[in-house]
Length: 117
Image 1 (tube, rainbow, N blue to C red):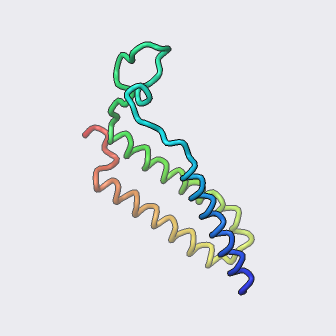
Image 2 (cartoon, helix red, strand yellow):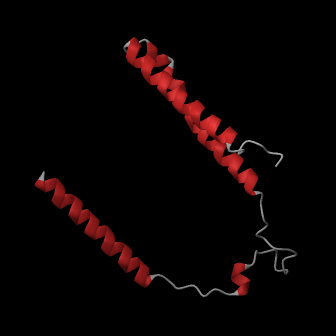
Image 3 (cartoon, rainbow, N blue to C red):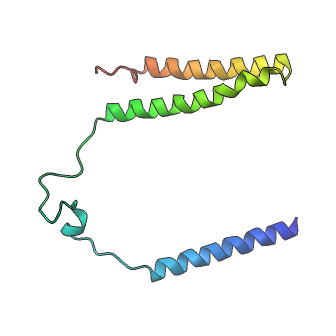
């Protein structure tokens, strides 16, 4: 136990020292207009490279990502039915599905799924 503590402490100290040395030796960049503007074959840019995007689209994309990850968590439920106890499998599956449906209901009631607003 004590050996594990010493190994963890030494590795933490070494990584901290390396990060401090690299930040001291790193080349400092000077921000100017040319470096912050997009490169368009040597010409001045026609417009801003940082165009505004719809916050509504971002919210829908995040909700899609969350539910996509939850689908990947749902996929192993069916194959584990044969190797687990029925009551434990049913309790776990139903509780997970109820949590998902409660989240979906909450998003629906808050209006996050209405694209037309």
